[in-house]
Image (tube, rainbow, N blue to C red; front, side, top):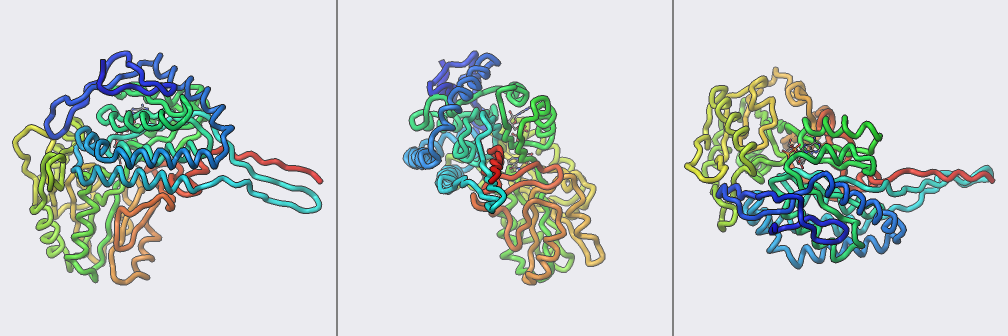
Length: 467
Ligand code: NAD
């Protein structure tokens, strides 16, 4: 018997085996969850397929009501969910509570959205109407950095459009997904939401499955490419939200202390495990030393520890694999540049790496070119003669980026040249359900949120009537 179950056809279901879930702050197993095999994955997809036919016939107003009920239930269970989230993911409890709150807010916003029929032409010759119909079963594949919030990026819009969902969480953070599915089981018709829990072995099974109409995937660029290849056999619809390596371009006219504080927050939230985190800071030579010192001051003052302890600001990395990867980045960063804060690992247990600032690094160094997805911030000096746009655009990915200056016209001129889905001015990592979010280049395909995001869960049908 596992502590947490699969959710298939509205029922808590035992697995083919169980998966242990480790608390990254203690490295100890603290819960077990039912794990799927291909037969259980088939069952989840079949249940979603049957339920979708019924769900698609409900009025959109009823779907909106259902979404609000899910938001209410999240609100009522917020403390319990936040605690489980901290235990499985590692983030400080305040960030976990904020994630639950954002999840609720995103769902409430999506519940206000609609898919009206558009009349494209209505004259003596013809009437042409555009309908947006559901696609069928949507596989929602979730990473481990925001295991609850990223469910809310996908599932509510999929449901609003009349689809059903199979949620596949990451193996290291499946518990909040199970709590979410349990909430849905009380509110939605049986089978509209189902879960598949794996140990990184069933994602490909879902993405090639003939009864899955769409894959909404968030994860690494490497896995995204596998998803795209595997979805090709049935020409599935795809939304891919992948990795990033967001640059920040800091012009000489900023208030250094204020800007440092904002940049620090955007780099180290969730221990740097954020797709849209600030991952490379390009700072003008005239303020470079001062900026490095301010960032180092903030990093040195951070309270690192178990997320369940009040006051913790930086928790552990989520899992051993990521911890080892970031440790490798740290070792190479020490050789490439100068570590001016952090850099030393505390004695175990726990996958802890303190917030680390490394200066005197340059393009071509691993810590600048690669997505670190951890608490290390490289600060790169540029001069007026450097091609700063070329540096910002010099990687294969393009998720976000930011420009920092008092001169908004100048900042906008630079922002428009950055090849990424979002560019912020004087902020970074700001997003919302009303703002389309997606990646350029190898950061993804398609967008989430807003009407553009909702449309991605639909099939266009044109009714063209002669008069
Ligand atoms: P990952 O790609 O390793 O895993 C993501 C999900 O894909 C997990 O559920 C995993 O089990 C599943 N998966 C593994 N192999 C699969 C396969 N062959 N087919 C289908 N699914 C498969 O990513 P991760 O390590 O969990 O997350 C970190 C990465 O995600 C970072 O690169 C980060 O930038 C990115 N990310 C992007 C966004 C965004 O919105 N763009 C948001 C969060 C994270």
